[in-house]
Length: 235
Image (cartoon, rainbow, N blue to C red):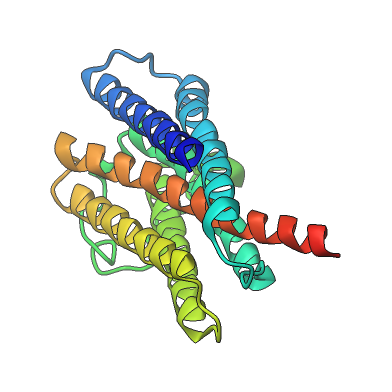
């Protein structure tokens, strides 16, 4: 039991450390310390978030296997949703790099529509077409909005599915509620970041909430991974 408590404290301390690294990275970006390079900035962001995900999976799997009862089993549908959510979140982070570097948050500062339009006319004005995804400020912001909506809808599906499950392990319920909360926080912070023309505080809040989302996804995947280990042990 003492080893378990010590492991939990270690995992929490490491996750907190990576959270602080994300905060410092955001501050450095705001102060202009980091060079204006999409590749470098993406590498730095993923260099913080990928270890965060792996540590969260390990922490959750270790803790769950040590403390839960024998009734929990992995849920394939939830695992699928979590993997889709992870893909969406990773893509959103990558698009966020271009949104930040090109100051795409300073165009179309209305929400949820873009000055009354859902598909702005400037979306595909650059030729060839693929250049719009990396050079057109309107396209970059529109894609960032699109993936934010996809992430929110996926988390809502996960939340609804959790409360429709016949057996709802308390740890799953708590983690899904946590994930929904930080997703709503990120979505709201992103919306107000646009409306108020990218203030530094809201930008940092938007980035930190994304870090918390990655942590929540990792913790949930860890719980399901521990269920898979138990199934393999009993088969």
